[in-house]
Image (cartoon, rainbow, N blue to C red; front, side):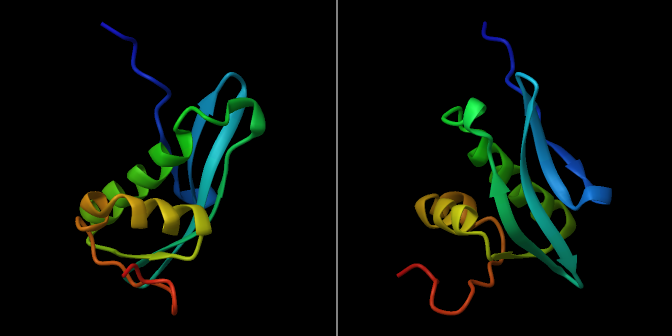
Length: 104
């Protein structure tokens, strides 16, 4: 059995989802505006890049939106691209695609 990977935590005071790995922090910065979860920026330090942490962050945001019945607004290019590539996850929530970016 494999050990669980780093856990994503919601830091509402910092308006971010964060995950720690090897002394570095990856984060997805967001804002809650009324009933919308606006995904602003994903940052994964180079030292921990390539481990799927960005994906873990977006999944955590989607889970949060599902739990709190929020509409997701993916302004962050990484989050937007991830949601476009993972329609099964995107279908779990209402998404307000920024103008000109809705998947075809």
